[in-house]
Length: 240
Image 1 (cartoon, rainbow, N blue to C red):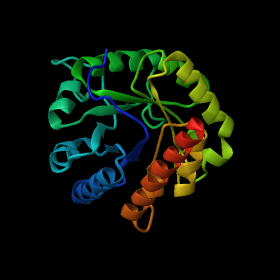
Image 2: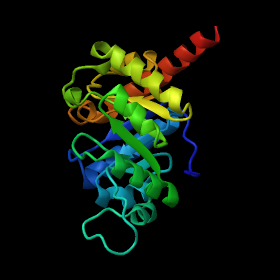
Image 3: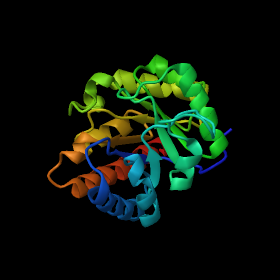
Image 4: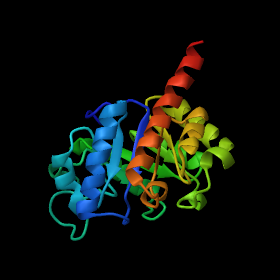
């Protein structure tokens, strides 16, 4: 069972994939760190493995996640990503089962268990509400529900896949209410962010929508601001 950081929504995630690394990634991380502090929104930042130590050291608020992890033990496993090594490097969590790095359900299960043992959070992708429910049974910290055809497309999940999001939220919460439900893919603008949150998601994020923006830092701030404002609006409506 995971006993580390208790993550509270709303949450924003910035996935660098292979778009940015080194000095540029560090500068973006520092800017994201300031934005996280300004809006009191947890930001998950997924850099290249080799950039994890310096980014973790040079930031105070970011939740630095690895882009993948393997369920290996200390010892054999050449080329695998060792949980203990990620932890020592400064990561606090790991991304799993992205469409570009797919895993079997049994592999996800074993990796979540190793992450729990090591004190690392897990954010697991699912490409359908049914897969989101299956993943929820494995007790990750976050289930990221996103239609794979929308990844990098610029086509908003919030506008085109409302049923996908609402069904995913309902199915995951029915299994484990503590799991944070993240909806993403195609998030290109602050309006997309707001739409996803209104549909019931507790977290969202972007890669190409930020990496391909004319001003990535401004795009991050605009998206995080929209996330926080919409979250407060939704919570106020529920209270009323």
